[in-house]
Image (tube, rainbow, N blue to C red; front, side, top):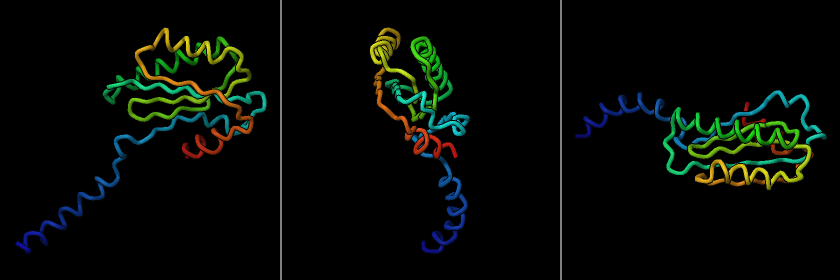
Amino acid sequence: MKLFHIRLLPVLLLFQPAFGQQAPRNAQKYEVNTSLKATAPDATYPFLLVTDLTIPGCKPGAELAETQESIADAAGTQLRMLVTSVHAGAVLQECRRTDYYYVRDTADLRMVMETFYKDNFSEYQRSITIRPDPAWKMFLDTLLPAAR
């Protein structure tokens, strides 16, 4: 029986690198607006808006990516109608998409975005976070390094 294990070992070693190089199923994917690198931090956009949307029970694939992209596009359009903003990037992880925007003003921002998500995508789990980030730490320390 020991001879069997020794002969099988080289075959198993051939397959190990292929499995080791696969990305974990729940690995994060970063989409970063690297064109902002030259101007960051931009003092005219001192606030960070983070929108987070989770589609419960989703099946990863092209249809999910298309759904997430269309929701993000709709949210971006809604945001542009309200305030001047810059889309810094997004983090995708299976059924969850988190978008990062830098905005000039936060007046009515939370109320309008919460209403937008509630009226259009109420079946999805969502959260909205707004905070000062005049040094663009989220972009420079997290998003931009992930794009490399």
